[in-house]
Image (cartoon, rainbow, N blue to C red; front, top):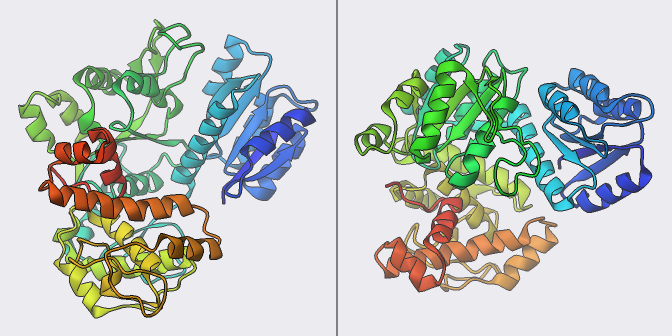
Length: 475
């Protein structure tokens, strides 16, 4: 559970923010003074801080320096009712995560806090190499595999991590490109500086440029204040550009200039800003083909691919599937409070015969789904998602359940509620979506346009759901 520290000398502000932001998923602690907040940073190691500029014993900016001296990766959101342009610039120059004005927009603040938690996790949680998938003492997100293809990936990470060059990671959706990017950062010479990530395909083009380069107040409709972009925030650190193959040519040109000169301007501004950022880019596209199609700049490709790492799809490293399946079974069994004693041989045979178009992400989702369906401590073949093995879904209402082709939503809810699971709605929704989308796609022979029309949703929504479930096939 992430911890949020709120430092403000007004008790009403502390109470309001704690009430609005504190949930069963976020632990909130508060401080009235700068020194008290600094002590709490040392004691609790919070995942993010909301820090007022004007405090009775020390300025917020000085308190920020003290906090970052104790935790270099701590994202700090600075808030103030006494804004000046110079203060905003100084806060961001010192490495503040965000700078917000009072009265605060609480919905915007919540979004910033969750974004800060993501940044904190990316920078702090180690990415470790676990070749056997059996070491319970290892803490962090694991890159698992013994296959020759994965051994080559480990060697490539080792070769390039300490070299201060840009890296391109190529691989299908769901192969673990972000894990590799984080491993490169964590073994680099820039670990004391930020690691930021942005998914270029998930942000509308009209907003992507502002996310990357920032904008000045009044640069466009809705630009009511200056925004600092990712390239400026990540100065002297590492920026992970995921799905860079989906970026438009105009944005590609601006990134090319930055990589060439180390300089850029915010949207609507004329001040040249210098930045020193190591770029790790990733794509599931064949960039050479997109270059031939005129959709990707060849000169940008050469700038990004100083060193290239190719991640193999799961179907090309099936020797690793048992390691991955057992790891996910142990991980999700613990999370769902349904320990998995073993995986039946028939289930393994089914998994090995499947092509896994969604790769490791799809396997992860399938194992989690199967654990919800389990009625004992053995993960059986019928527990796996419908379509994976060609069988129906196992009802989870009792030990005598048989495949019925229906979902016992009430039974799933009762189990998840009894285990005090925190995302019941999303867990059940994912189970329903997986079956519904697979059934609709089978009916129309995999045609996504026809399936979206049949379901009454947009194709964008359909693709987003398929990707989140690990069901999106590689084009």
